[in-house]
Length: 396
Image (cartoon, rainbow, N blue to C red; front, side, top):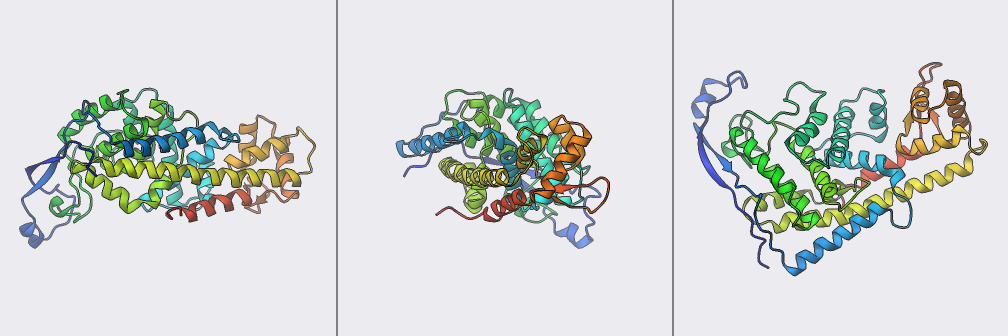
């Protein structure tokens, strides 16, 4: 099968000067450190023609139809689960970077409780995904910078929402880029390459899933930030899907699908840089298909939890306790303050609803304190942890 031709990267030999103070190098290390390295020369893609074979085009169309059907809700209503799907996709994208956290820790971090570092990092990715959805209508450089700012704003090591001004590389030694797996383009090339990518993302002549996959691969090839490129790039993939109109309402768990294909995914990015776009197109199509199945299973499990709760709850119909059930599906750890804010009820009403759900075995109180209590919906947290444990396995 002929490859999908795409512009291959070139390279440029560049003098290497270690950043002063970045590493505590011995004299021997300084003597043996090479004085040059090869950085990628990334060609523009704004006007590149995409020619797809019939089999690949059909593969992409099939995956796109599944995405659209999931977004529309299929036989049931998906929209109420949009926030939990967003959080789950963010966690899967982080897991590709070997960042994991329990559902409870992540839910606690979301309401300002708990102190686990990984949960805070993953929560930043949730904010990035939300920014990607909010900014999909105007995919320009400022939108991409805003996504990165949402991801990196809680740390001080890397510049948040700013193109990199130094050389970065992937893999190899931390001392020198000479033996890296991939050396992205020079920092001075980044602004023009990102402007070209923005023009590419605004095209209207490409199949939606191919458009999103190629934009993602080009973004990862440019590597415009000193950190957070993978998570920002996967959020950007969702932005392009929304921008093209392929999806409208929910975050399909595509990163969950990519996690099961992690080795193939990284190999596909390498092939893309060598001038063959087919592997990344196939990889994203497969990830989209498996992601919709993963999402359907998660939503189905949460619907079953909600139905079981309805049989357990003894509160009168129409009370705040019933509204609290729906809130817990998307925010499984709450406080009275959260309930007041989200449901628009008084503090006494919120406390009464929480106590009713504790009495009916739907909520557990986590702190044992008399004040500032934190409540968790163990059924939802167990479902989310089971979902996370199943990620990384290919569907049979």
